[in-house]
Amino acid sequence: MPVIDRRRRRLGIAAQAVLLTLTVAGCSGLGRTAVGPVIYTTERDAVIEVNSPSVKGCHRLAPAGAKEVANETLVDIVLYRTPDCTGPGTTYVATTFSDVKAPSARPWRSFTTIH
Image (cartoon, rainbow, N blue to C red; front, side):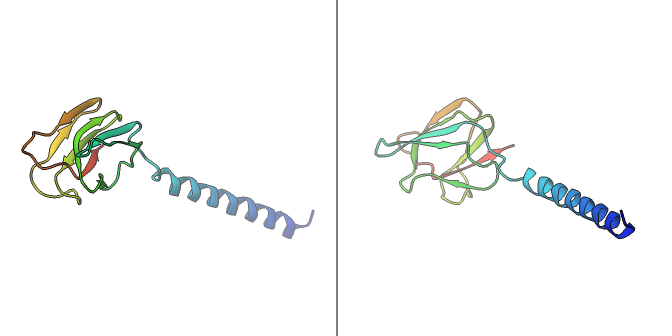
């Protein structure tokens, strides 16, 4: 086997190893979810289930908001009265717990996870 062929083979193996490493490293942060559902009831009594939401970012609820929320995920969540996960009036809901808003309170419109 000529020297050039061996060099090409080694270079090819090295390139494949680098690409595989980059692929695994790049995908490891993707797809991290709060395993399990967040189940909520809207003001019109529709029950909505969000299965395994991402642990990153703000998650909007139905436009009318939610009056009851059950956190059946493996991580805690924080409920917000605004659609962009900002402002006062937050509610902390631990994993496998639920919360019901007070009759005079505004509905929850978004949530984030705590991980």
